[in-house]
Length: 364
Image (cartoon, rainbow, N blue to C red):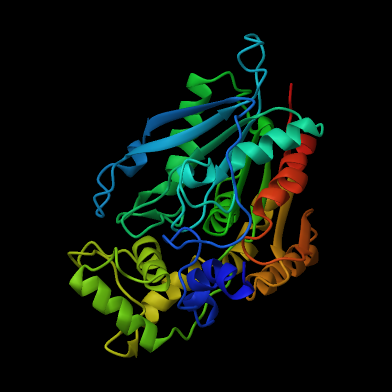
């Protein structure tokens, strides 16, 4: 896989926020054929449940997305054999344009197969847990795991509706010490966002290659003109990855119920910056949010985040977050490894992410 193609997923989503030009090629999750290693879903050692969770927090969203969300649950091999046993839960958040089906190997396009990584981790001594991934694909290909009248309150769906459903329907250990949260790219962003805003739900968090950490106060007028055109014509499905990313960001971070039919505002209109919208987007950048979130982050048992050294822009913002948390004395682990945005996801899950939660979650 070429570095140019594989880093596109992170750069396109971060283009406006970081001021980095997005590549024109389609990234993983956008319908492109991805060259590279073949990913084959082996017969899982555990059981995959495909369920529907009603999101009361998503009812009435102005996008018109269904509040009944598909969720994939991977139950460990011992779940059926030991009916008296309870398990910690790891909630996983997928990236922009991705789906839970893609991550579970149920799609024709693979850059990771979560059950394979989990089974390999278990074989190397990682303790068994329940893995849960909600499908956050929306009208604009991603929810940003934020709270908006346009997309619905995805923050509450993850931290309340979903957690409550899983605790009520599976043999979990229903307490924060036994709940973890992790995600990749947009999911990594969502992981840090929810960790900063909602302490006391999860005890340990791991953000893989988190996008959108930094705000860009000088968005591209050229890009925004293309976004406005896609918005006005309604040609969203055929839009490029970068344009979809900006539409999704606007729906999540600058909703406006007075502005039908899309019900959101863009940061540049007719070539002119809109200061209030730019400020609203900046307020949703974790590197801006972190200063007010230090007490919340100090409450976690464990925090980790990473990025590949060739994941341009994202690696730099991961380093910035590392420096800020270090300055405030917040315990965490940050790592820059050899790689790009997608080439080591499955390996990182097996050898870093799952062992991290095996070490830090409570299994009793």
